[in-house]
Image (cartoon, rainbow, N blue to C red):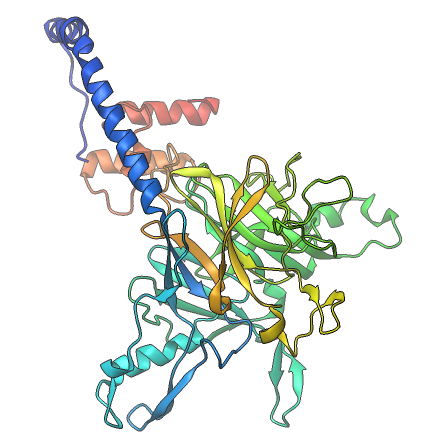
Length: 487
């Protein structure tokens, strides 16, 4: 968009525009009824086609248990050039097709083929071998997000073995953060990047808000000092049990360069959240794991004594205040486990949240036929870690199970194919793109109009008078906004 400086409009030119508009309204507008009907027919056909085709989900594989009978790792061999063992692992990027009636098995995408780098007992492509083996580090048990074409994964390393072989809690290097190219799966990090436990990077999920382009998440806050606004409140310590540290879940933004979270509220919420997602309207939703030991009914759902669905519950959060909104939604009707799962929205339907989670709450029939907590030891046989794909109606909270997933696939991050990143809506007046509207944006806009250099500027945000072009009138509109706080 080139800078357009103001030019006077003559009375003749204005009159000409007026005549053109009158002609459009008299002669052309009635004819558009036919075109409207045609467009509606095309749209209806497109919608039917989309429904018939269903959706293709993409995801980052999450390992919860190793299962040699299903999707375990394969040792390829020792690579002398790389001086490391090469494995083909289940971790990586996947796609999963749902055609509206059937959910097909997830497949690696991009695929990892041993024949591409190993043949006749020899490594034929060391770069490809390293690429394949690096997926072993694509673990995101504490969250993942895509921003600017880069996938950031966060892995919590709660228990580590010390040199004596003892398992110890690791606080100073708790979180391992890695960066990936979302298209190719290339590892972009030079090495492991570790962060301490007190940076509180464990989350129920992270997502980009299409309204402001920021990354939000529902983070689990532990042993983090409360802000001064609370500590300086004389009523805070009136309760002898009050503590100066924070705990619980809180809505936060996160700087992915520094991996620093910025709390919007203290850790106010203590439910067991397992997902977090933002729809195309910029509305944020989180899903709990549920909290009942009741037996499922014939339809697979769990109901309370009054016959109402119970189980996992959908909560909505206000991203401006960080507070959970009052809601009267019912529960989803399905139970899940207290382990991180994933959810996403299709941009064309902000009312349906797709949830990839566990099939049960860890309860089931034991070997004696009694309804009890299922054993970890026999999880392969008893189905404790079986998974499923659900569709959740966020207007009511109820869900329907689309399919039980074979081989216990679970994603730590899920999105719709082609919608890795939402279309970010501009912040009107934020010319320099720092997320706020200040006098600096006025300076940036004037500099642009004088020089024509748009480097580092958001020209969509610069059209402050919504005139369709960037002119000196936008400077006036921006200054008026700063003085009156209204547009």
